[in-house]
Length: 177
Image (cartoon, rainbow, N blue to C red; front, side, top):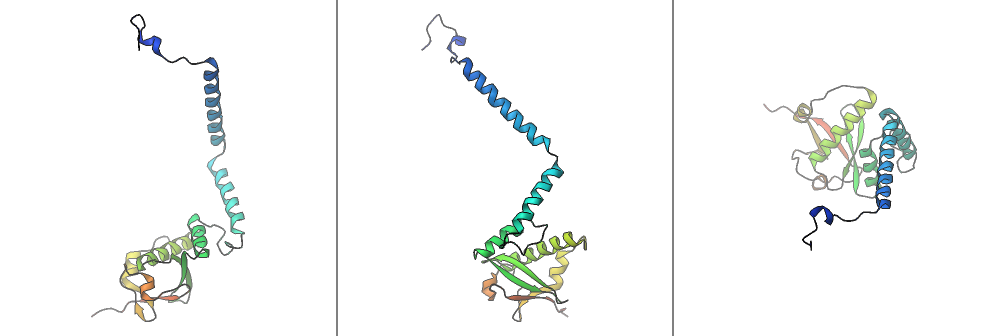
């Protein structure tokens, strides 16, 4: 309680000089860390990150991944190793097989998105076509497993009978008259 002769300014807590010095040192350390972060340009940080990824890809578990690997690809490979994902081999008309990694309970839409991502990464690495109209692709082509078109995007792959390492064909749809 405040006595009658005290003013509101007299009620402030007492702070020791040592506490003020410690706080100043902490602030100086934070400033030094910020300066250290600003010392490296983005290109050098990117080089360090890529070197770390290159070492990571040398691991026997991840050795199948490309040199310019993404975090998404690493996570997919780890999920595959732990049985949380499966590889679906998508066979294109030209005979090329695309190994697509999807989660165990993936839907047809998830597979389509994974195919799109696979092709985008492949094009970035190889410098291929800049733009693909996926709306056109999915209107013109269908995914087929054991003779059955996988038309419903919401249906799970396992409901079609697709299991790990099964082959799905990328086939042109017939025109309706």
